[in-house]
Image (cartoon, rainbow, N blue to C red; front, side, top):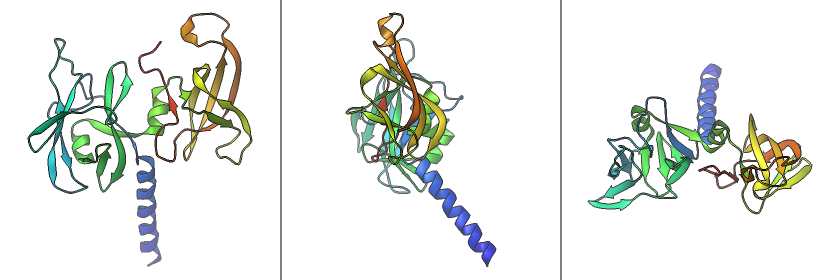
Length: 229
């Protein structure tokens, strides 16, 4: 009996961890996905009214350009077609877009427009779920604090002493792989002018500490220049 209860506890705990990790984030491709420049498969994706619910229509790519690249996506329900745009799509590279999900439940993920997509279908079409935290770390770029700013602290909670407040794009935030809950350990470079200025001797000071990378609304507290300088 004790072994059975322990097994149930482990399963529940594992599911809770998975749900927390992938509650919100992006739908991005694995190495076998070949299309550019919106991460939606040629065959499209079915949309549902709820997890394990009724099919409502589908999301699919628009017309390809002369280079066989796709820059538009559509959503169709009851024969009515509409453009699929922000906040359902997020720029993850230079003019490269990925679907955003805001919740996950029972093997389905919820889009910003309220519809659900099957995680099983995503996997079968070479797409995977990535949490906002892991996406930001994997992207390996310099990030900047959202307004009104982000406190850099000595540890991963508000109980730790504040080192400084990061504001604007003169505080470049580099994420490390170390994380705890919604917090990430970071390295920060303070500039007198942004590196895109092309000038020399731009660094004023460097810091190391922790920032609350994920908000209570399960979104990123940072941004980056998606198209570069």
